[in-house]
Structures are given as structure tokens and as C-alpha cells.
Image 1: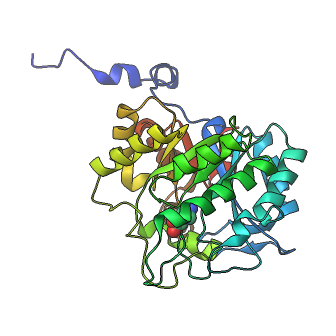
Image 2 (image 1 turned 180 degrees about the horizontal axis):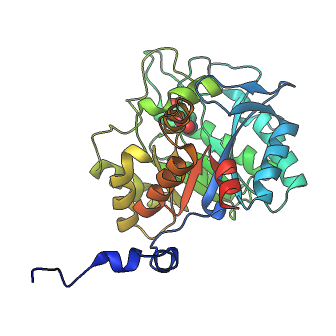
Length: 323
Ligand code: PBG
């Protein structure tokens, strides 16, 4: 009588049926909480990211402990150094802010996975992710040694994994080589492999004081128009020794996450970046969205696209909601 024999609504009739056939899950164990640590003694709010703060080391340990108790397994550390120079040398200072924070976290929470962002942009006076040539362009190969030095310094402090976010060519190989030489063969590299030159990093740059003083990052980060090129970046990073590859941002790049997932066997991470956080927070604050429902849906979508790991400023709240 013209009725469809296949009725998909049969399996949607009750919560029990829906639970039984759910294809994707979102659990605290999938999440990584980014933390901004600084050498000051007070918490500082971050413009553009309501609820996110720059934290003194002790407070960062407390925040990590709260998240860890709720089942979040990992944090990603960003340092805001007390001084900058044109090379970014505070990045590889064994007594630098990230190094001190890693030691504090690993001594107080040995089970917590501590990942450190490896880049020079927070540490350079000019705000670029590498060192500059006289003409103002970023010198790829001169930057590699500085990134490797930074990664080793983080490993020496106790980092479980280092996450290079600079987008220089060859940085994974350079970092892997030096980590192995220095006795850190067992420390992992989470590569920001497919990192796009995105407007969605705006609030982060205010948080980390890392906006480029001139120009932009399009000479080293991926063009948002290019998905095939993202797959080349991912393949190269894996060849160079990346243990996990990351796509960043996440929500505007779900197609890239899905394509990366389909093309590699290593774990895939996705970074739900500062601008994505801001969009949801401000929409919720304005009463336009139900924050909890919208955030859970957005993060589930990132998992469904193929991310094993989701880096998100919502990690603490989501872990509470799911708990
Ligand atoms: C540093 C770095 C950035 C982010 C993570 N690492 C900013 C940038 O590349 O300009 C962005 C994270 C976010 O927006 O949440 N290279």
C-alpha cells in the first residue's frame, strides 16, 4: 500500500533501543584539556574565552587534578613566558614555565598524561612560529634545531608527549632524532600535522600573547581550501615518526578529519580550537543555544568524523556532564 518496508524509526522508539544502536560515543577518556600556564601568581581571565584562565603553576595542577578525577586522561600545556626574544629562547629553558609546570604535574599526578605544545610563537618578540631571516620570512631549517631543543627540554622535565604546532617542514624528523639521541626514545610525538591558517585561533592568540607582530602564518600553515595537501602533511609526519596526527581546527574541518581517519592507521586527534569554543560559549550566553546539548553534539560530531582524541577547552565541563 505504498508503505516503506524499511522503517528506520523502529530502532528510535526508546532510549534503550537508541543506546543499543549508537555508533559513536563520547567519554572523558577521549578528551584532552589545554591549560595556559604563566609565571605570575594570579589567575587571569582570557578575553574571548569566558571560563578559560591563564593559571599559575599551582592552579594548573589543581585544574588538572579536577579534570583527572573526572576521567580526563591528558592535558596539553601552553606556556606564557615572563620574557621574549627574537629566537624564542625561553622555550628551551630547563627552568622555563612549561618545564616547571610539567615537573609539578608529573610529581603530583604521575598517572596524568602530560603533553606539551612545542612552538616558538609565544616566546618570540615577533610572534612567528620560527626564527626570521633578515627579510622577515621564517627560516624553516634554522627553526628545526630550536624546536628540537625545546622538545628535549620538555621531555627532560617529564613530558609524556610533545606536540609540535609550528608547521615547519621536517620538524617531526628533527624532534624524533634528537629525542632518540638524548635517551627519550619512549616519549611520543603528537604532531599538529594538518594545521590550517585559521581565523578560529583568534582568542588563543590573545590568551597566549602569540599573535604575529606583522604578516600572518599563511607561509607555513595550510591553506583552508586544501584537503589533499593536508593528507600529504599527515603522510609525511607519519613517515618522519609522528605517533599521533592532529587536525586543527576541528568543526570547520570535519571532512579533513574523516579523510585523515580513512587514510592512516595511527591515532587521530582533532583540536576544537579557541574560536570554536568562543562561538558556542557566546551563543549559549546570549541564550541562543543550550550550551550542554550543543557542546556534547559538537564534540560527538568530531568523534563521529573519526577523531580518537579531542582536544577541547570544554573537557572539564563535559567530563562533569558525562559523569
Ligand atoms: C601555536 C598554537 C596556536 C594554537 C595552538 N598552538 C595558534 C596559532 O597557530 O596561531 C591555536 C589553539 C586555539 O586556537 O585554541 N602555534
